[in-house]
Image (cartoon, rainbow, N blue to C red; front, top):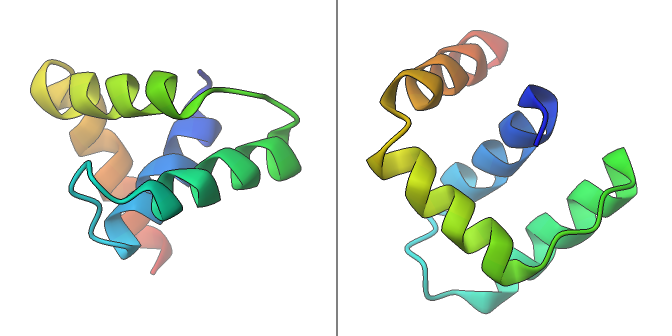
Length: 72
């Protein structure tokens, strides 16, 4: 997943206060990634990626949050 795709996903999930149980939000992420980047990923893939990002990829997650804060 490219950095720009990750940025889009994190932005949507943070705005919606995603907690892992709201299927409508993940559907919105899937549609947005397909519309903006032409990639198709399943909800399960994105859910696992989100969990991994928060738990194991601390540096990348901080970098994404900084970029999002600067853009607002």
